Figure 1 (cartoon, rainbow, N blue to C red):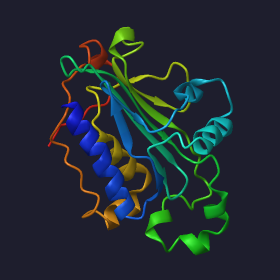
Figure 2: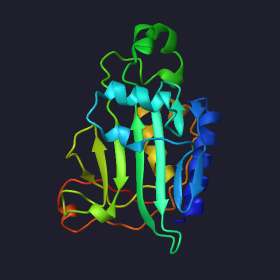
Figure 3: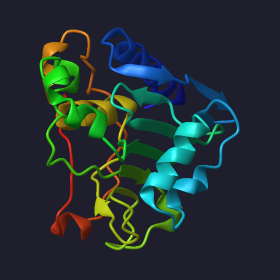
Figure 4: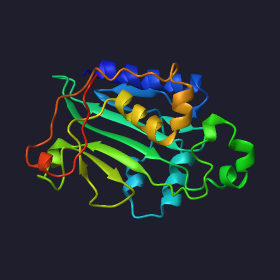
Length: 218
């Protein structure tokens, strides 16, 4: 998996989400010295600070610190860092920040429930929670800090092992299937992402013995 292919996939998924009317605003990626980042100057540490989630979300939204803002307000970030000398992946952060308030959709559900785009957010019992995927091999601690891991919510020690780093296509496919399932099915022709390309497996054998996530590339 090369930096060029990752950059292409981010541009492609962004364009496809726009075409399916699922994307409200977008910032196409920039690349410099192996770093694929969100255009503009942003403080990426805000998402890790000890602040109420609503404040974190508001800051990210205000500063347009996202690649994609979904139609329901959710923010998506895709940031990769490669070593330009040998093409290896050094680290990444892929994040999904749902809007902390879906009251507009839930209080007027009769307006939105007939539109497939909003079908998965109109239920009043939904509790939103951010999801983040990180690849950080330099800070690997066996079972405690897997090289590739998933974090649910803002829990400091929530690091669910991943078998391998995710490509942009894998990440967006995961988000759409689980949080925009109705729209994903309706626009399946527009939202088809190849899952053949992948990074190499990086999970340790000891981490395979505990609950972890993987994917069979197809």
